[in-house]
Length: 356
Image 1 (cartoon, one colour):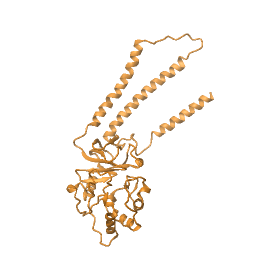
Image 2: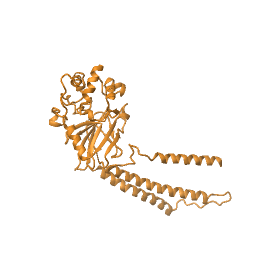
Image 3: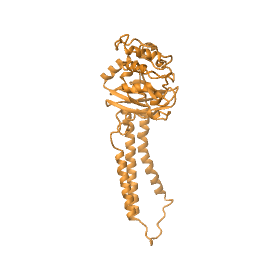
């Protein structure tokens, strides 16, 4: 009896812990949908759980009744055998089929609805790299990394591919996972209905830094999004057929300033071989499938995070990153041709922090 009581207590404790684990405001929870796509998927999930709960309760109730009401005694006669009873077999076949139909019909409808690509949506091209996400806005003329800005209430279509290995784009509060491949596009769409910053994650193992391949969906008001695109558009490699125009939004620094030295270091130190920067020549084929290309840094100071979302965009973190990228993020594709001097790092940090 004591043994049974202990097992019951353990079962109740595990049940309470399990239920508690299902609650809370978790940033990457699929249980808090904030867009139309995610809400449709969530409706199917919750409907399936409700049917599963009904089946569980009925089966467990029947089991308990059978255990306590029809428990066999030593002197009981042999029970009647129902094997081969056609009516019982038909009933036990129809009931699961009906339940599966109630689950399958809304599931199939949702699959077809989410597979339809809307024609009245804003298009964003998503490109996976080891280990960061690139976002291009063809109509707006913007190229950025890690942070995808979208206006609230605006339907967006993501055309996605990879520049190297297989990745999977996933922002759980807005949409499902989608694998991205070379040489062909996969699509995903959603409409965000809540303003804020929402984290995403690569959901397909893609190398040693897979767990640090983050992304953010930044949902803004239409006015804020328009202001962001206007600021980001200047110097974008998608404007003027890839020719970078002079950036008039940032005043030209004095000739002898640390910033102009940083710009010289950006070119002389080899940064320009992998990164586009307004006011400097573009790297060859940078945005046409070059797997060694790094993010467009024309407006890097406007981003909240660096290194594929690994850490905050602060002076100290930028200095640490430039000092030894391989130490901060082992096996990253950012490989310096030579170690930078302390003076070069200081001038580069000052220069990059002006790039808004």
